[in-house]
Length: 310
Image (cartoon, rainbow, N blue to C red):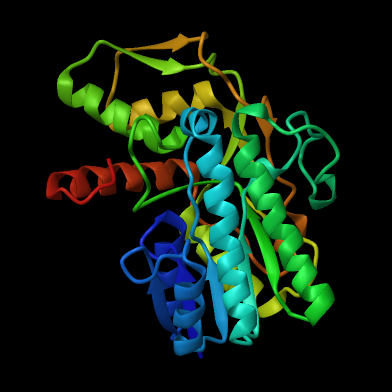
């Protein structure tokens, strides 16, 4: 049973590849050096050649509030093309199973909490990342359409905010947690007395270690078969201020944390209802404290070796 993992060198994809390999599966990883998923013909030719029984689509153009808000065309157009090309290729090659990974940003900005799967499209999106969210919503609909029209047993999973090894630590393009890790590690190294962060620190967010996501992907690929997308998260959240204080503590930063309230906060709160995925027998195992501590150590080591994405 050959499994293709698209985005295999990224945060989610690398963890998913490791999880399937640990389960004894043959994994073929895709990144831009293997095949350009923006090229429909090349993608179809590759998938027909490999003939996998399962494709996991963890490939996407991703970033934090700043990147999403600055480059909405790229976040919408590139993601639409990547996921559409890969699904069309899978259909042409008659791939039995397909797992599409989306994002919890698909839900309305002012959504009821915790967020159930059925809350999709019940209100306006968060403006700062609406282009990315629309692309992921389109991916869900395309999965449902392949199921309806062609009887495909394909599924969609919607992870919460992920973190862990092989994340993107660029200050201008990363998500909040890796950005905090880099900022506080560098603040300690530089002897900084104050670190200024975006927003007010008031929004609440949920985080999941990428290895826990990978375990959920393995289980869902075997046990889940429904047109309804499936939330994947810890089911617990905290304020961005509390997150910053935790990262600062674990990085050894004892200075002042200041907030630039002229910068956007994004969605006020976002925590997923994960009742359905837990009913499959999955539960997250890595605590936020332990996960951040290990990610900080990974980042320090990878940076020293010159292999971190920064």
